[in-house]
Image (cartoon, rainbow, N blue to C red):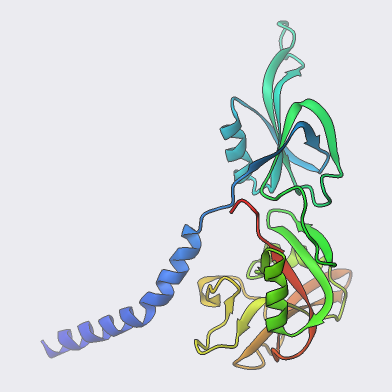
Length: 262
């Protein structure tokens, strides 16, 4: 009986200590995904098409785009296609899933009355003086050349309708690495600088909720601090990694822009 009571008490303690983290981890999967909104009628984007499909209606196109993690798509109404039989041609709705959305005030939109352009992002994104880049399947990011401390960088990203970039993902890290200069550190949304004493991203999600880690050799070098990413080049291969930096140090930073329709 004593053994059973001891086991029960220990189990309850373990459950209570871990329940808060579990709730926060579960919330990640429950977060509402951004939605696609109509940007322009009578145009289609000339951005790279990663996939296409004949669909019956707009909702089917949205579902197809979401399944491909697309950031935008062209929806063609009653597009005449070459027939596969002797019946000749036929008209169907065409869904063109795009690798990236329009980033520069719809500069690559092409007039075409049969199409409509949909995106998770508005047709104009304020760069704040930085460089806007697209990481396919992840989103839009701004690479800032200004050197700010971590708190200042956070505030700067918020003014641009964003946050310091979420990088607890191989897809995001490898995508951003293509745009980073070698040996230059840039702040991202990962830190351990408050009373909670855990590593978490800009969305207050603990690092322990994710399977992906990208600590550099010997990192984390401190139990508290803010994270910057660097790249290491070897045999034409670029490897990005996380490095702990004192939060008061001024560095360039990377903002992740929120979809306006979140």
